[in-house]
Amino acid sequence: MAAIYSLYIINKSGGLIFYKDYGSTGRMDTNDSLRVASLWHSMHAISQQLSPVPGCAGIELLQADTFDLHCFQSLTGTKFFVVSEPGTQHMEGLLKHIYELYTDYVLKNPFYEMEMPIRCELFDINLTQAIQKDRVALLSR
Image 1 (cartoon, rainbow, N blue to C red):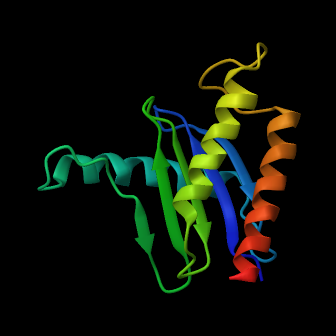
Image 2 (tube, rainbow, N blue to C red):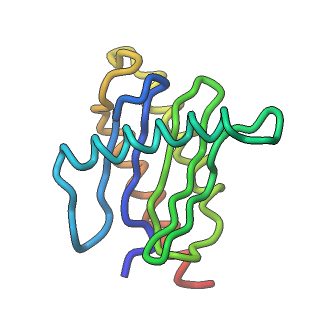
């Protein structure tokens, strides 16, 4: 069973710019993935405003019975979130590595337009390698 079910990247205005499903069951259609991204963007923004802690960055971890949702927000407002098996550890490091791949292969791509869906083969290849490497590391723990 996969430790990581899916990965979403949302731009600063809440638009889904990348979605990849790694789970073996229950693949969502495009409309469902857009709804999940939009809902997460809204919940994240509301949590920042309602937090009693000054300077709160929003929700970083949402735990449910059947999944965990880990989120990393870059300084530009782009959100990276992974839906994983409950109790999966060390997702912060993976999300930061995915962000590094995003900066190296997407933002430095002269043909990529900001805030638009990501269509970059080198990003896909390196992302797949990072996810596979993380799965192997999780199995060995």
